[in-house]
Image (cartoon, rainbow, N blue to C red; front, side):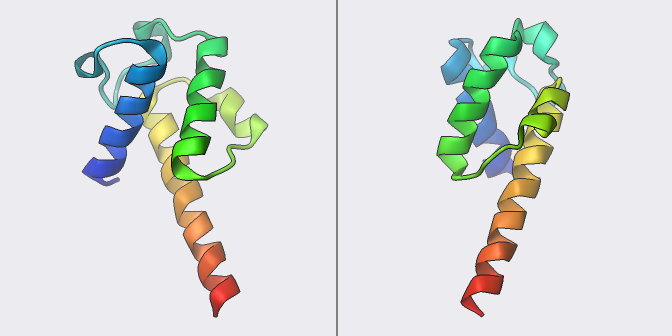
Length: 89
């Protein structure tokens, strides 16, 4: 997982939740950060817009911490790049 991805996701969480980015670590749980399910939805929308991805509803329901969110975004970005490569080949 790249440092750039980690920082971008942390910034999105901080901006949508209005909390200092310093409070957010890769190991932070949503409960520790005071993020409830509605907050989670807002974060997911922001991530989808930032990275031009679609996060499946079922996957979103399983996310409980920052690490899971980052890993999911990373997988979706990698999958999108692979799909684009297949289309342009």
